[in-house]
Length: 259
Ligand SMILES: [Zn+2]
Image 1 (cartoon, rainbow, N blue to C red):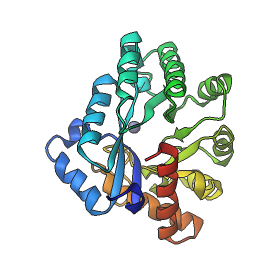
Image 2 (image 1 turned 120 degrees about the vertical axis):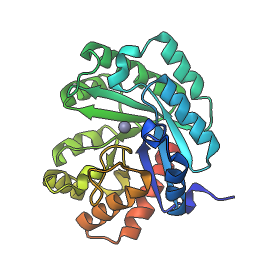
Image 3 (image 1 turned 180 degrees about the vertical axis):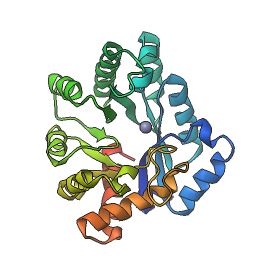
Image 4 (image 1 turned 60 degrees about the horizontal axis):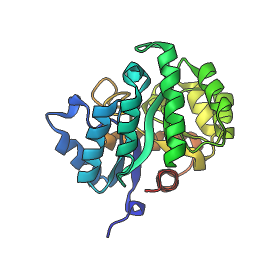
């Protein structure tokens, strides 16, 4: 049987259930598999978490994260938490996520965001799954909550966009850092400096498809096959062969998510 170890890369953060793929989802998935790329597809609320699990059950090299995104935190309640916990019984569910805080768009009240985040961190601990964390302009409160509950953590700070010193804080808490399309953007020199400092053993590559499309496709819809542009950029920053980035980040994803 083919194992996850046979994959070239694993896109550790995509939203394959997004309606952006309704017209050609099978072709998008086929392009990833043809390139030997596995995918963790991540839910943002209960229905999309269910959709993620359905996709994961259908494809050997797709796994699912289940969680309520900070944008949807106002929908998080006892029923939602039970629903998520029920989903974690499926063996293709490998993480609680996408969870976290987003004070940039503020689509849910901040108090509701903090509540949903804490509750889901606790759920992850109870069901012994790593977490996939979203953080946008909310670093102080995020670190406050993480430091309040007990470290070390198992999980990833997805789409990390900070500098080297913030990277060190997350590494010290036990997290991996998810590097995505923005690392290819010209203006993100500080992020590239951070990537140079982060040990390759703690880096995951991701796309956040259909969002955050890397160069040279920036401006168009993203898809998991484009994770190779992220891996190539990480290799260039660290001045190592791309094969080394592929091998190590795939191992990192397999180990962290027990794929
Ligand atoms: Zn996402």
